[in-house]
Amino acid sequence: MTIAAILQVKGAEVISVAPDQTVADAVALLAERRIGAVPVIAGGEVVGVFSERDVIYGLAQGESVLGRTVGEAMTTPAVTVAPGDAVLGALSLMTRRRLRHLPVVEDGRVVGLVSIGDLVKYRIDRIEAEASAMRDYITGV
Image: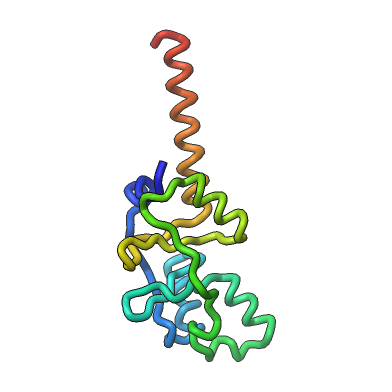
């Protein structure tokens, strides 16, 4: 099971922001799209990730964070995975690093974004399919 398989199911649309956009604009995008994070892209490369956590950390220091740039508030450097990486390896990485979103990068270009929810859902679906196949085998269906 690879990250590429998850992108095939969920799609590979990448919604991103630039580091010079305001935090307020990025928050509006997160709310509009009902998503928790976006990769921050400059010059075609991922330079960070901007997430709900970044907003909360910034607001803890005052509302002025909304006028700052995403580049000042984002989490950097971005931890990324490749399409060929194993789902279990990505889950392990996310658990160890306390991450909820990983940009998927291929040949230096962002080709998708996966969340821990995407990975867990995919894993559960696979386990359920294997269990069903095993039941069918045992019952001779």
